[in-house]
Image (cartoon, rainbow, N blue to C red; front, side):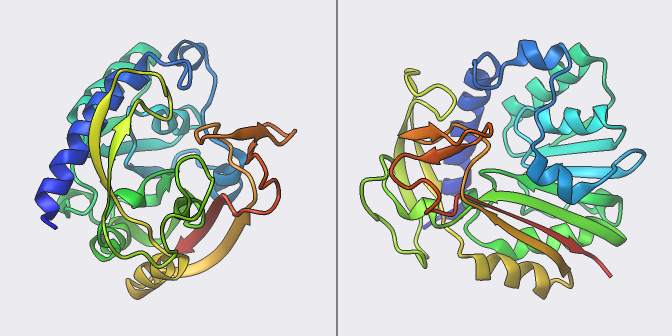
Length: 265
């Protein structure tokens, strides 16, 4: 599999999604402009107070979480593969009158100007599944942190990605190492949208995630798993009663999200 082809294919996918998502009800930009934040308790509990901290948000899409951090007083930089997403993020920052820096870049490509610049590096929900190899990603996370800095990650659990899209059967092994090539129809944020594009993704077992990060010198401080998702972005979801979502028929049985905090010595 040619990684360059995979990344360019995914860039086209996320360029199209950024255009679609910016006006979607799922992302509700109007509510965001009125002050609604987009961060969840899962990641906020691990971050603590971010006021005055230098923060880097990896794979930031069009910047709602990045700008939510700016509203909390952080000095934020967002980075994303999609040029369209970065353009939309800069537009959104202007509309919100918030200070933020946005960089168009592949998360696995080292950016020397970011080395040792951040108190917190943050990534969340649907990010590492677009990466074939976690080693360069983890190396960059470690490089970008200041000594004593923290890495905060909240991500969908790899057990979720074992299933077909309708959660009727296990389609992929937990230890799947091959690219998952799909023709994406619509989007999680707009399932009925007339969008049909190819995608490349990869499932990463928890051990691979932890091994890559620890192998680059980061120390695990906290690790948590959750049986529900804060986002209604899967098929066959039902409300959990606390503002989150289960997969129907798997309520309380399927791990859906994990989160961690690591530190750079």
